[in-house]
Image 1: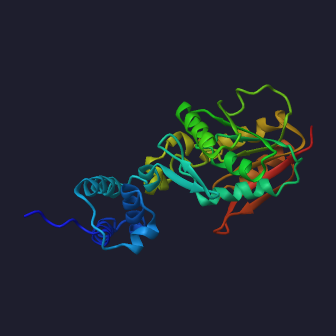
Image 2: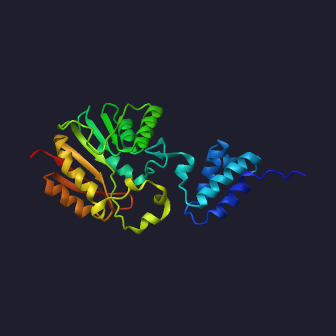
Image 3: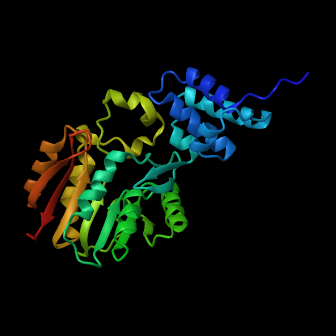
Amino acid sequence: MVAAPLSIAELIQQAQARLWQSESARLDAELLLGKVLGKSRSYLLTWPERGVNAAQQQQFEQFISAREQGQPVAYLLGEREFWSLPLAVDNSTLIPRPDTEHLVEAALALDLPECAQVIDLGCGSGAIALALKSERPQWQVLALERDARAVALAQRNAQRLQLDVTVIQSDWFSALTLQPQFHAVVSNPPYIDAADPHLQQGDVRFEPRSALVAAQQGLADLAQLISQAPHYLRSGGWLLLEHGWQQGQAVRALFQQRGYTQVSSQRDYAKLERITLGQWVGE
């Protein structure tokens, strides 16, 4: 006698119990089952009694086992929403996070020309560049990324979203002609100290370390961008950087030492200093 297939509700309940270490166990289970079934969360809630066939149950089991081991849901789904844009993600890039949307907000709030030239350094999946282009179609947005796999991923996201963002491979500014051409430079660079214990926790265990960790207690890449950006910024252009919540004072000092004006830090949704920006008006 063949056993009756388990229902959507039963599978979610069992998975939730197994994922007890996750702060979002039920949501994780719903998203992963929705991926297997090709259905939305609202469908799962509307039809909890629907049976799930054996092949789908096996695929769901593989997802839940991977999640039990700590694999990020975003990597399992192959997608993460950022600024209401569905972005393909994989383990070549950081997973876009809501806090980084504040960097987008800060850039959009600047008084820039209608056809401003803007660059996103270390673009990863293309999240920041694509969000900016979606809001300012007339901006000329360039995205640079060192990792070849991430470059290809960002290019695919731009094509899928039909957003005209140019993505090229470059180690920070290295692929650019040395001239002041940008009205704004934005970046979410590596800024975590290699000794930070949070690197052994949660999703970051599976994200590329090169996109997370920087030397000099996390300040090395921030310092490099602050130093080099004036060579590429037009007079009156802006540099905007995301950084660690305890790094605001140090980053402001680096901006000021380099000669930027109107230097300030902005707080994220948790009221922590997360973004610092400054204007370059020339030597």
